[in-house]
Image (tube, rainbow, N blue to C red; front, side, top):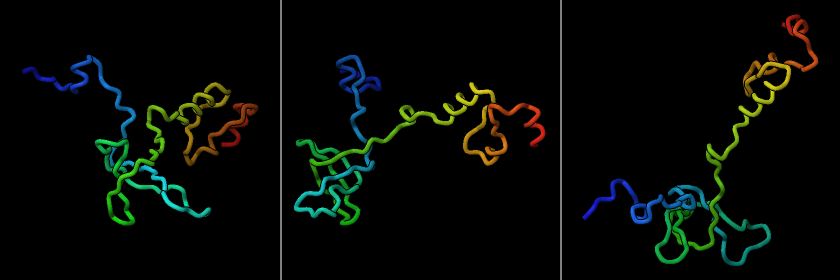
Length: 131
Protein backbone atom coordinates (compact mmCIF):
# COMPACT_ATOMS: atom_id res chain seq x y z
CA UNK A 1 0.00 0.00 0.00
CA UNK A 2 1.48 3.38 -0.98
CA UNK A 3 0.84 6.80 0.49
CA UNK A 4 -0.45 9.79 -1.43
CA UNK A 5 2.23 12.13 -0.01
CA UNK A 6 -0.03 15.17 0.47
CA UNK A 7 -1.76 14.72 -2.90
CA UNK A 8 -5.41 14.38 -3.76
CA UNK A 9 -6.36 10.94 -5.10
CA UNK A 10 -7.14 12.34 -8.57
CA UNK A 11 -3.78 14.16 -8.60
CA UNK A 12 -1.90 10.95 -7.70
CA UNK A 13 -3.76 8.99 -10.41
CA UNK A 14 -3.61 11.53 -13.29
CA UNK A 15 -0.39 13.38 -12.43
CA UNK A 16 -1.84 16.91 -12.38
CA UNK A 17 -3.88 18.89 -9.85
CA UNK A 18 -7.64 18.94 -10.42
CA UNK A 19 -9.33 22.26 -11.20
CA UNK A 20 -11.42 23.26 -8.19
CA UNK A 21 -12.04 26.89 -9.19
CA UNK A 22 -15.75 26.19 -9.76
CA UNK A 23 -16.28 25.19 -6.11
CA UNK A 24 -17.43 27.80 -3.59
CA UNK A 25 -16.46 28.24 0.04
CA UNK A 26 -18.87 27.20 2.76
CA UNK A 27 -20.60 30.23 4.25
CA UNK A 28 -20.38 32.31 1.06
CA UNK A 29 -23.48 34.16 -0.15
CA UNK A 30 -25.79 32.44 -2.63
CA UNK A 31 -28.93 33.72 -4.39
CA UNK A 32 -31.88 31.31 -4.44
CA UNK A 33 -34.70 31.72 -6.97
CA UNK A 34 -38.06 32.17 -5.24
CA UNK A 35 -40.50 29.54 -6.45
CA UNK A 36 -44.27 29.72 -6.67
CA UNK A 37 -46.64 32.44 -7.77
CA UNK A 38 -44.95 35.86 -7.43
CA UNK A 39 -46.41 39.31 -7.87
CA UNK A 40 -44.63 41.94 -9.91
CA UNK A 41 -43.25 43.67 -6.82
CA UNK A 42 -41.87 40.61 -5.03
CA UNK A 43 -38.16 39.84 -5.47
CA UNK A 44 -37.32 36.98 -7.82
CA UNK A 45 -34.50 35.72 -5.63
CA UNK A 46 -33.29 36.03 -2.05
CA UNK A 47 -29.81 36.00 -0.54
CA UNK A 48 -28.88 33.07 1.73
CA UNK A 49 -25.77 31.35 3.09
CA UNK A 50 -24.22 28.40 1.22
CA UNK A 51 -23.90 25.24 3.35
CA UNK A 52 -22.80 22.52 0.92
CA UNK A 53 -23.40 20.44 -2.19
CA UNK A 54 -25.82 17.52 -2.37
CA UNK A 55 -24.47 14.08 -3.28
CA UNK A 56 -26.97 13.03 -5.96
CA UNK A 57 -28.72 15.84 -7.82
CA UNK A 58 -27.10 19.10 -8.89
CA UNK A 59 -28.43 20.89 -5.85
CA UNK A 60 -27.05 22.78 -2.89
CA UNK A 61 -27.91 23.13 0.77
CA UNK A 62 -28.41 26.68 2.01
CA UNK A 63 -29.21 28.28 5.34
CA UNK A 64 -32.27 30.51 5.57
CA UNK A 65 -31.62 32.97 8.41
CA UNK A 66 -35.26 34.13 8.50
CA UNK A 67 -36.63 30.66 9.30
CA UNK A 68 -33.39 29.28 10.83
CA UNK A 69 -33.59 26.17 8.66
CA UNK A 70 -31.41 24.42 6.09
CA UNK A 71 -33.12 23.90 2.71
CA UNK A 72 -32.16 22.28 -0.61
CA UNK A 73 -32.52 23.96 -4.00
CA UNK A 74 -31.52 23.37 -7.62
CA UNK A 75 -32.24 27.00 -8.59
CA UNK A 76 -29.25 28.92 -7.28
CA UNK A 77 -26.63 31.43 -8.38
CA UNK A 78 -23.30 32.28 -6.78
CA UNK A 79 -22.36 35.96 -7.15
CA UNK A 80 -19.01 36.67 -8.76
CA UNK A 81 -16.65 37.74 -6.02
CA UNK A 82 -13.53 39.51 -7.24
CA UNK A 83 -10.33 38.18 -5.76
CA UNK A 84 -7.11 40.18 -5.32
CA UNK A 85 -5.67 38.45 -8.42
CA UNK A 86 -8.59 39.45 -10.67
CA UNK A 87 -9.26 42.88 -9.17
CA UNK A 88 -7.25 45.63 -10.88
CA UNK A 89 -5.06 47.79 -8.67
CA UNK A 90 -6.55 51.23 -9.29
CA UNK A 91 -4.04 53.10 -7.13
CA UNK A 92 -1.05 51.65 -9.00
CA UNK A 93 -2.64 52.49 -12.35
CA UNK A 94 -3.33 56.08 -11.30
CA UNK A 95 0.21 56.47 -9.96
CA UNK A 96 1.65 55.19 -13.26
CA UNK A 97 -0.51 57.60 -15.24
CA UNK A 98 0.49 60.55 -13.08
CA UNK A 99 4.18 59.56 -13.28
CA UNK A 100 3.95 59.68 -17.07
CA UNK A 101 2.57 63.22 -16.93
CA UNK A 102 4.68 66.23 -15.94
CA UNK A 103 3.61 66.36 -12.27
CA UNK A 104 4.85 64.19 -9.44
CA UNK A 105 2.98 60.98 -8.55
CA UNK A 106 0.37 61.62 -5.89
CA UNK A 107 -1.01 58.83 -3.67
CA UNK A 108 -4.77 58.55 -4.07
CA UNK A 109 -7.08 58.89 -1.09
CA UNK A 110 -4.80 61.02 1.13
CA UNK A 111 -5.98 64.12 2.94
CA UNK A 112 -3.20 66.21 1.40
CA UNK A 113 -4.28 65.20 -2.09
CA UNK A 114 -5.63 68.65 -2.96
CA UNK A 115 -2.42 70.34 -1.71
CA UNK A 116 -0.01 68.20 -3.77
CA UNK A 117 -1.92 68.14 -7.06
CA UNK A 118 -0.09 69.99 -9.78
CA UNK A 119 -1.44 71.20 -13.07
CA UNK A 120 0.59 70.17 -16.15
CA UNK A 121 0.81 73.82 -17.30
CA UNK A 122 2.00 75.05 -13.89
CA UNK A 123 5.72 75.75 -13.51
CA UNK A 124 7.93 75.00 -10.48
CA UNK A 125 8.02 78.69 -9.51
CA UNK A 126 4.22 78.83 -9.31
CA UNK A 127 4.20 75.75 -7.06
CA UNK A 128 6.77 77.31 -4.70
CA UNK A 129 4.75 80.55 -4.45
CA UNK A 130 1.62 78.61 -3.59
CA UNK A 131 3.30 76.86 -0.63
